[in-house]
Length: 163
Ligand SMILES: O=c1[nH]c(=O)n([C@H]2C[C@H](O)[C@@H](COP(=O)(O)O)O2)cc1CO
Ligand SMILES: [Zn+2]
Image (cartoon, rainbow, N blue to C red; front, side, top):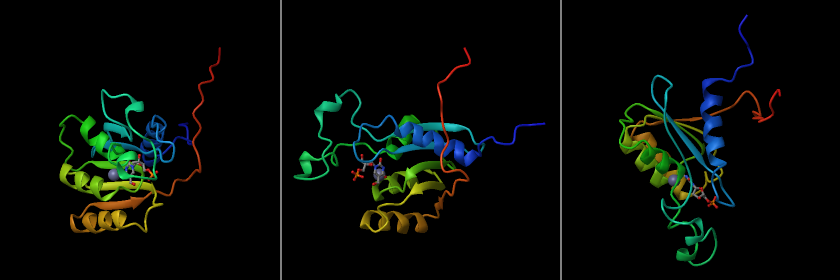
């Protein structure tokens, strides 16, 4: 008799996005993205962070104040990192799982990469122009956006061993 309490594909991939977000140093918003092909094979993963080869201390994590003294000009978004981490692999027809609804810049990159479905959890910036632009572009480009309603509230990962 097979196990019945295994996690669904959606919980698996969104869980990987959330786990990836746990690598983010952003004090306010940790975002993870997981790109999956049409055979449910994981193609790429990314989280929001600063630039390769630079120290995380080189840039500010602030949200407020003069634009150049905030993180916004510098932080690479999770979706962008996931697309770039695919290292040029063909993403046509793939899905992307991301815990936060994509900003308008990520929406453009998602569309241009050939990704056709966006699964998301949180839409806390739904009232911003950025998100409104994302939704408009996704609609015009026929990229499907699906808000995940997970069956369970949380999945626990434990490193406890039997010995
Ligand atoms: O599409 C996105 N992808 C993504 O990685 N992020 C990241 C960028 C920032 O590090 C953080 C947003 O910061 P905040 O919530 O403090 O404004 O989330 C933010 C968005 C949308 O806001
Ligand atoms: Zn973005």
